Image (cartoon, rainbow, N blue to C red):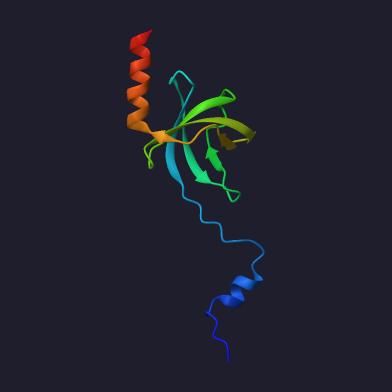
Length: 111
């Protein structure tokens, strides 16, 4: 007799893995850190990042995403937009917001 977890038959009938989306607050700025819009960040099933933004906000193709929960900043590119939903691609790994602020301050002082 083989032992199976009670949930094994349920998992076998699923067409795709369960979607566990973490929604969190964020902000979008241009590459010069000028504020553009507040947003809601969520994880997409394919491992990407989705955003919810006011549909009236005009956004550049490349921008910075500030994640309030993770306290990170990442340069990203908009892949597609439909009404208030956006899918973005991260251009580089997110960095700590505090480290980003130190680097941005140093760049402003050198100008």
